[in-house]
Length: 207
Image 1 (cartoon, rainbow, N blue to C red):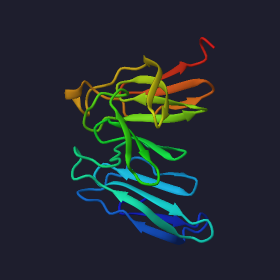
Image 2: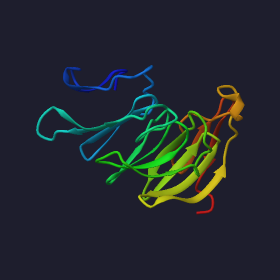
Image 3: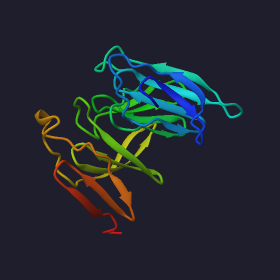
């Protein structure tokens, strides 16, 4: 994913197989990684919304399924992701919009099914990093909270939440600080950091 397009390349030579334009409006802010599942490739950024491509199974090509963009970053359509990489689960996409709105979209249309502000308070560039584990989603939000939940077309279903690290001031001090670095999971531990410290937390306690 470049600043102006998505491309398919030969992994050995870098030869261009296909390209599809996704030109930014004001500036390119391609931070959230594109996601691929069941031959669908989904990309989203802060300024110019979302794009869904269908990757051909029998030739090196893609087809645009839909592209949606709201009139502004405060009046968005579909998803205007900033930092958080979305998740595709079955016929639905789950992602965090430009001001922290956790949303569920219909995969094949981009229509919004629901929106929730329960996972992180609303704020410009509000962020949640999401990792799937079996039938649950583990979220590390920018306020330093670890949330275990389930996401479905019926809504956001919180199972547990605990504060594991303090957000640090600096990037957006008027909001009391943020934790924007992605968490990492390994061997029943979670690794998180802010601008001051790196923590390793044992998740197996209480098993």
